[in-house]
Length: 180
Image (cartoon, rainbow, N blue to C red; front, side):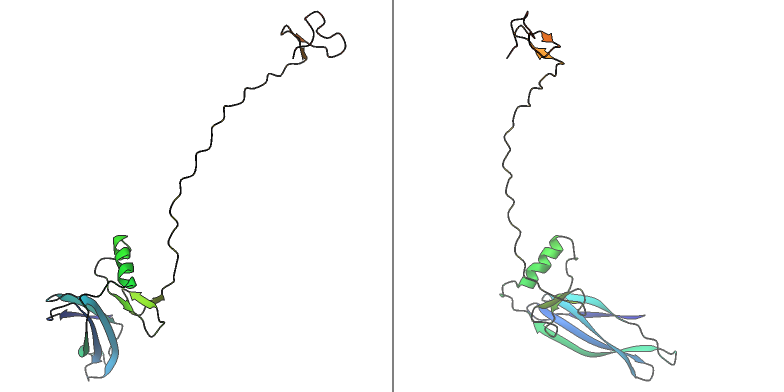
């Protein structure tokens, strides 16, 4: 794997997006591969560095060179409201899903609402989702007193509270009759 560090300096008064294209060449100036590097938003008077990688090996085993093909600068309007993508990336940064300063942008060739974060070759389409419903407290359930267990007796309870083991005629006759 071969790598080259690229640094851009924004000498303008406002933010700008930078796209840099480099070509990896062999010792005879033959092109081996072309790499496109997106720098994202570079602030006024700021510099930013990125690394372009290529998996190439010269056929002759000799040195490998790099040729600058194109530097494209797009001015970012300073008073433009934040786009949905800007807001989404800010949420991703706040939640720790991507580091601050991670490059991102549109993929207009893929779909009308396709975007990339971190790698221009990794486009994904936006999906409209509904916001989560607000949490509603669950109403407290009324508490009921625990039922008093009914004792189980082997027989009949008489009016005076005694228990008779019989259940036929004359049960509890000496104890005031059957209790209620």
